Amino acid sequence: MRWDISKMNTWKAEEFPRGAMIPQAGNSCDYVTGGWRSDRPWRNVETCTNCLICWIFCPDSAIAVQDEKLADEWVNLDHCKGCGICANECPVEAITMVPEGCDISEVK
Amino acid sequence: MPEHKTLATTGNLVVAEAMRQCAPDVVAAYPITPQTTMVEEFAKFVAQGRVHTEYVTVESEHSAMSACIGASAAGARVMTATSAQGLALMWEELYIASGMRLPIVMANANRALSAPINIHCDHSDIMGARDAGWIILFAETAQEAYDNTLISLKVAEDSEVLLPAMTCLDGFITTHSIDRVDLLDDETVKGFVGQYEPDSPLLDDENPVSHGNFAGLGGPYFEFKRSQRNAIDRSKAVVERVGAEFAEISGRPFGLVETDMMDDADVAIVVIGSSAGNARYVAKQMRTEGIKAGVVKVRCFRPFPAREIAEALKGMKAVAVLDRSESFGAEGGPLYLEVRSALYDLEARVPVVNYIYGLGGSDVQLELMHQVYTDLSDIASGAAQSAGLRYLGSR
Image 1 (cartoon, rainbow over the protein chains, first blue to last red):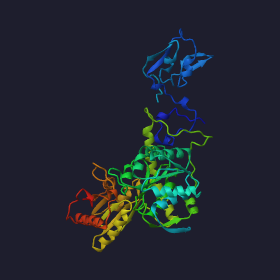
Image 2: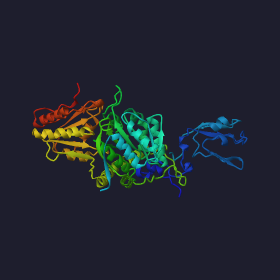
Image 3: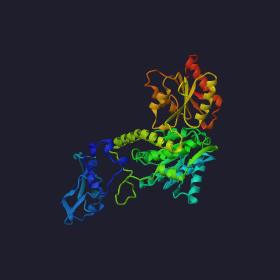
Image 4: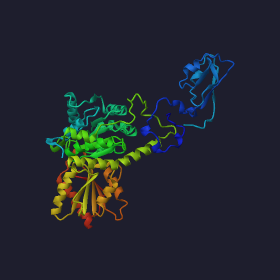
């Protein structure tokens, strides 16, 4: 059974696994880190050539690809930490980092 | 009563023997006076094939405790030993071991901290680690060092506890002096400590887990500390239960607090470690002089047995707490602060004074204990006021 951490913010001391252990592998998808972001990547669809270099470089695997092109919702904002590596690496400067307030409810 | 043998031997050698009998999977240790002969003896057992332990020789105590933490998270039964500067160098790992809830057992040969450099007994090293989240037992004798080592392993690995534990013995006085010790046979110890069944070890590749994780950025760090507090609070009953089980098989009683001549005492000394013997000897002398003297020995310092100490000292006319370590700038030594706090809720106020004694192995002569009881007798009779903190036997 998958370890459900969706209510972690309400857990009491004895509900957490002992010693900050993570009792299951492969659950980083459930752990929302998008709230750490202060700048959000914005893509100019006119300039973008879909070379997918941003997808290769993204350290959080937060770039979504569909049919060998960037998906319409091309950044998973639950996991993008706003590091700006995609904008830095884009060979045609199609990605710009734009400031934002934190608008994700499940900030961890 | 199981088979046992009686030896004339040292504290270090019987702790090594207890470690061999516990059969740890991993020992990572660095030699330091006065713990050295303990880990040398254990290394000899490994070399002789008398215990099948992975003995990791490391380059420092920082590495020793780090290796112990990794091995314990992996699921191993882990033991080690240190002293003084070595314990100080382990400082950050001590908190990591307890925070990760790893039942590592470590012997500490109590020794003064530098500077000036000194290799002899006091409790500065261990008292500096008193808030690190470890269970802490103190031995008065080599016998107690042996017994406490076995008890602390069983307490640490108890599923209600899962915390690291330290078993402390006074440097040179207990680690190196020849003492009479009764040892249990291997089978009895094996039955007592049992097989360690780690919960969620790293090496269980069927059930992959991650240890040592991040809990910051508004995360549940506070909650983890609370559950650590709950665990060490729970450990008190476990120490008592395991101590009672040990008394069954060894015939030697174990108490968080052990009292002598307290039933009708007017004045009492509260003390930790080897000096309890000095206090007991002099208390008997005082009784021939008409002073009803008693002794309260604290054998378990963490969790602190505040209720038991208050119960033992209730109704005393004067109490002296003897600290073999400083808490510079505080109102007194660490034991004094906690004992005095333990007495606060008593209906009738008990006058308590504090003596710092025996730092850096300064000799704890019987005359000094005599002086303490005489001072207490004067305070009890109203002939003297309590004098606050005093350095006992210091020029």
